[in-house]
Length: 469
Image 1 (tube, one colour):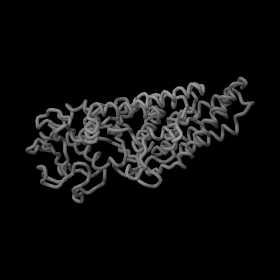
Image 2: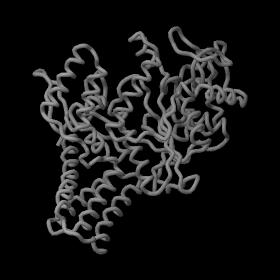
Image 3: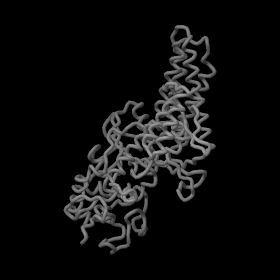
Image 4: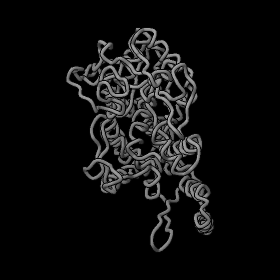
């Protein structure tokens, strides 16, 4: 299997540190609001990578964090006059609901930044002792970026060409006691109304770039196989992670770096100011989230992806084709005669797995893998009929389920039918809950209906519903 390594800017044969095992860290969301569809892309992409590696026989230890202390969380807490913990815990739970809807598997470990503060303090102490970090008069701790001899190796930036203003914490040299404009924050003093932790330097909190270094090492080791995230994290976040981790541990931080491309909306960058900002929850009001997952996998993960209503409708139609093929097999199996699939049939069916695996082996090319699935669907539609044996039909069914499961697509109809009267009763209860501002219950009802294949749409004429295709 080959992976495009951002570090080398080329495809490399994947060789794990330990045979048969994969140690993988994926940067998770900052939990201050519902996740948007841009957040969903790395979740879906790297969940699919994890599923495929498991399909290939690897034991995957997959760690993805929640950043639960951040300026945005603090701002949200102040706006609502509640604690930062209340905000972060609320949106961690909402994130998990959306992940379930997207069929994203829970990580092996989901560490929270606030639960790893002691480890961050120890890392910073170590960097100070090794002269990679320094403390200013107000207790701020900065990393000496120019001491990192390979700084810029991931983003392929020349350190001498970098200017102030890149990233969250790069400031003008000399301001706030900084020795160099490139130096970034490891620990910052508390401000009024902010959460803080005691440290040897001041009461305060860690810098963003320090968090993932500590969590990756604690749960995976000083050197890991793969570190992944969106391409917007390459610089400065991942670059600064490398600088700290390798300065402290003296070993390579990660052998492979994977980054997914940006998501645009109708050809433009997603932005609240442009009115084209969509949360996963917004999409779930119009589509089964399996459609969103299928749409995300329709393009190569490193390519920019354009989101539009037309492309979502195309993804919906494509998913219906796959589900219809599966349902036809189920129907035929009810009255099929006994008998095994021939060796020739089995070999022919296995060709689709080979096409699928070849695509996925080529830097997780899900677009070509989906094409292989459609080829299998066409084969099912043209060869499966009333005269097919149970053995043959089951072989086709097993193959289709196996490939779609790797993609994280649910094609089996496991929902129970609801009577129209039951649906109307739940919708009325949801309306009452919203009227009394019990939004948690309203969301629960919507999620319950969605799991049963009922999609709600709030319109000026009231709530309309339909069964998912």
